[in-house]
Length: 170
Image 1: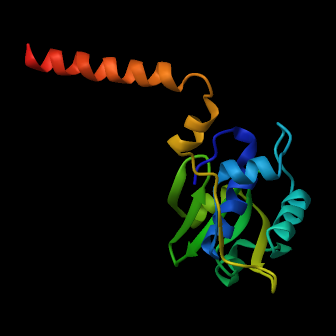
Image 2: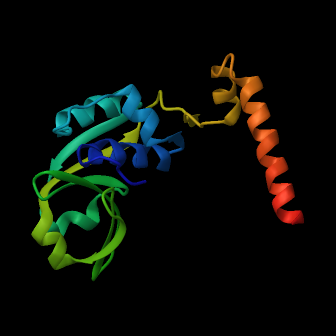
């Protein structure tokens, strides 16, 4: 899941964690349900939204050496202004999902440069339910909204098809 605006990295990370546990939600839905300012979101706000998604959250301060002790996936505070999802820690590499660029395998040295030492651990609480909460767009949704234009659009569609048929014949 990639963020579409610079300010929504935190929301994208929360959506990724919720999806991991089976609550299928897209960024559009979570953005509409939990609007944030253009300056982004802080850790406290992320914890509030996590509670509303029925995820227990716990912010921890850790050293780089303790990274492999975290339950994954979890959210890492990155470069003092960004959030990423920690997916896996191995001896030489760390797999993160950066909502700005996608999944990346990076070295421990690179993690040391960007990781602020703050992690947000998220787990489903007893009220958590696997669910689907997506606003999938369908043509039928738009078709029902164009009252008065259906006949005109149908004629345009029919004429377009006829023009294509004539173009193929000639």
